[in-house]
Image 1 (spheres, helix red, strand yellow):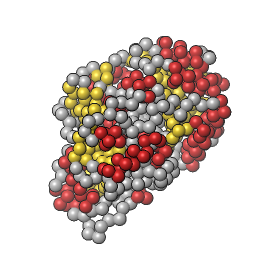
Image 2 (spheres, rainbow, N blue to C red):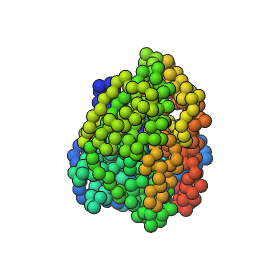
Image 3 (tube, one colour):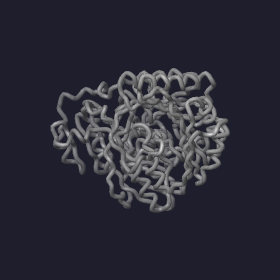
Image 4 (cartoon, rainbow, N blue to C red):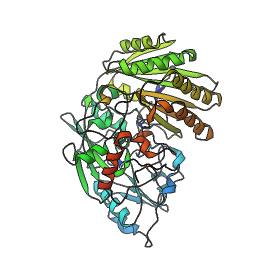
Length: 522
C-alpha cells in the first residue's frame, strides 16, 4: 500500500469507494517509496517491449545524524567553473531543464506541493539508462549532489534538492513478461504495472496508490494487501540494473554482487546508486475477498487488542488494515478494511470479530477481481497531487493496555484540535517475516506491524499530532519504516539490525559519499 507506499492508507468512507489512503506513498509506502517521480501515469497501456535497464532510485543507507526538514539545506557547493549545460544536454537522448527553461516548474514538482519551493539547479529527464549514467558522471565531475526521482512520493521530498541535480527516471517504464517474470523500468507507476500484468493473469505484492513509482516503493520494502501471503515488494525482486556513484553499470542478483543486491532490497532510495530496471517474480492475479468492519468509539481499545491478535494468529491469507481516524466533531472513527487472498472474506471477518469480542456495528463483504481491487484500493487509476505530513512507528510486538490507551488518546487529541489525522495500522507477519532468497536489508521481519501517523494538514497541529503519536507508542516502537521518512528523526532508526552491514555497503559502493542528502548515510 507505500509510500507505499505506503501512504495509501485505505480510506474507505462509509459507502464511498476506497481512496488511496493518506497522501499516496508506499502503498503508498515513499515510500515511499521514498524517492519516486510524481508525474501522472499515461492512460495508455505500457509497452510490451523489453524494458531498458532503467530502474528506481538507489537505496538509502542509514545515518546516525538527524535530517533537516528541508531538502534545500543540503545544497552542495558548486565548482568555480560553471557546468557546461549545453554540451551535457546535447549528449542526452532525454532533456535537461534549467530554471530558465520552459517547463522547469512542472519538471521539478513532486507529488506533495509542499516541496514546490525547492529548486534544483537542473532536472534531467532521462530517456534511457545511458542518460542516467551520463548524469551521474556529469554531476560527479561538477561536484553537484544528485538525487533520483521515480514517482516523487517521498514524504520528505527526498527526490528533489536545492542547487543540485534531480534525475527523473519516469520515462524508463517499459515492461515485458515471460515465464512468471516481469521486467520493468524503474519509472513505471503501480497502476500501469498491475494493468500490464493483468493481461497475463499475474500480479505483484505492492502498495495501492496508483501513481507511486515502482522503484521507490520496492527499494524501501513495499507493504500492501499481499504482504502476509507473498511478502514485501522487495522480496519478489530477482535482479536489478543499477548505476553506482562511479558511473559503472551493475546487474545485481542473489549470485552477482549479492551484497549490493541485499542492500538495495529494503534500505530506501538515494544511497548506493540509481536503479534503472527490475526483474520481479510475479504472483497469481486472483479474485480477492474484502471486508469492512466498523465499531463505535466505545469499542476502540477492544478493536486495537483484537487487531493485534488477528495480526498474530490469522492465516497468512488474511490481512487487515486498522484505521483510527480523528473526526472534526471531536470523536474517533474506528474501522478495519480487510482482504482474504482466498477470495472469501467471511471467515477472516468473523475471526477478527471474535478477537475483538464484539460484532461490528457495520459490516460489508465483497469479492473483487484483480483490477477491480486495484482500482478500489487506489481510489481509481490515478491520484491528484496532495499535501500532507506523516511519520511512522514499527511495532515490535503487541501493545499493552497503557500504550493502547495512549495511542487512542493521541488521535483523540487530534480530533479535539480539529486536526484531520489518522493512525493507520498495517499488519506484518506471514511471508513478510521470512527472509527471501538472497536476503534483504529490510530490518523488521519480526515486527507485528507498522503504524502510519498521517495528517492532510501540514502546520503545527499536524506536527503536534505526529509527535504525540510517537510519544504514545514509544515503549512499543522498534523504529520506523523507511518509505515513511520524516524530518527530525535519526536515519539509523529506519534500519535497525541492518545498519552496520548497510554502512559497509555504502563505503564499498560510494566511498566518496557522492549520494548524500539529509536522509542518506553520511
